[in-house]
Length: 384
Image (cartoon, rainbow, N blue to C red; front, top):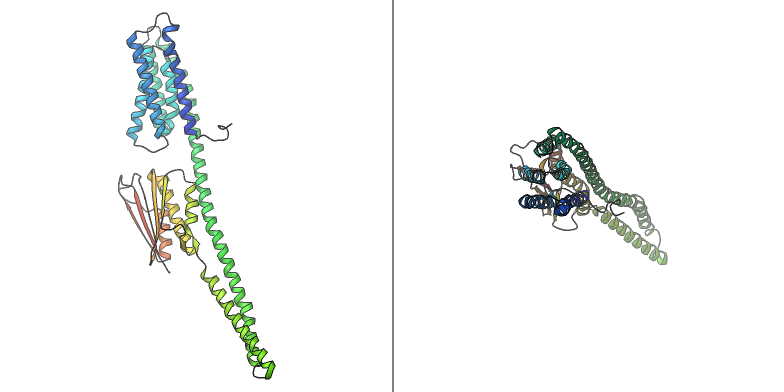
């Protein structure tokens, strides 16, 4: 039930399913000397045992870092050891046991390589399996080819199942990212709506209540010149109260108009919640980063663009974002540990970011080097 409800991630299910298949493939090795009257020579049996252990160890280590981006050389090394161990098991045991372990490699391939190299590796390992099986004295080349073809079909099914899971993960991650962006935008819109409502109320107070109080004050001022005695005292008292009430209304209206700041920190926390990769490290000078709605919207879009760039182009594992408020402005810096570029090409996203900042009197600086990641600095003045 926990599996159906999604308690475990696909990569965790893949890890445990592969380990279970590896364990099952080792059972014949453990029972070899009991079942078969003529067991393998001791040296071959030890070789089988060592290769099987090596395969399990490499697979376990591979599963620890598989969700992360690593160098292609490391991925090829792991695949070579896994495939070589599986084929070596078939060679020393003179059986199809290695073909079973190659099914595990078939499932892992889409996570390690792009489609064309992965399919090429899949076909090549089964061709080598056919050659390995054909060297067994009791197995002819045609029988070995048929058995390898059968394993190729099963491997292709496992391979495509893994591809489907990867695509579903990509769609799910994209939906989470878009949902977080919508929630972050909604957070700003909610605050903007509150500010707009306060401004509307302030305008109504100023235009209606303030206008009538002003008229009342003027009329009471006129009346003070037309009466005397006890009536004059009451009129003067009413005149003073009207002037005091008018001053209070103007003060309330001014306070409501001044309180037009939004908390950018809340929107940023909401934004990064739905981004599984890269790992985002958010550093804020304060948990209440209050700024004008327009500036908050621009900076939120800048952070979104930096996250998109790190996901789609930089192949980054980590992204560091820092925002700080100074006397003269609001500064944002972001950098990732991606592949970087030698020659920076400013696309529509970065161009739009620069244009938004310039409209508010800000500026944008971009730095990138091959292997040194991508770095961005944005600044907006306090007033525009």
